[in-house]
Length: 142
Image: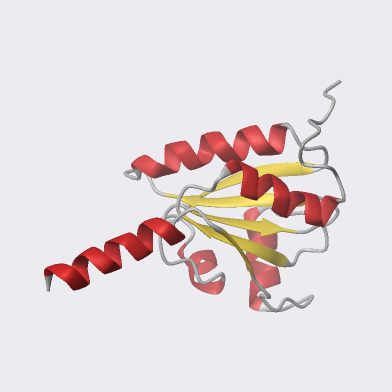
């Protein structure tokens, strides 16, 4: 039993915070599109949608990483959502834990998903694949 618990823990640590590509189906009136629109995700902007809860300590670190990456990348917004207050969206978007970060492209399609605190480098690379910007070059703020 101890070996199984250790293996499961090591597997979770290895996968935690990794950016995974996803192909969440969206349509103009589908449940995913409706849930994203209700949360405030707007077409034309790539958005990091972070699901958090009040009692979640890792959510604070995820907020910091997402805000830093979004602030340094032109055309990217960060939206934090209280998972407890938005249960319909949590169900529609298949969110199982906090923090969870969804990378939504400018067309409203969920392209990447992170369970746990995202790794900044991987998040920048995922955004670069969507925005066409070099992740190594910070955005110029005016």
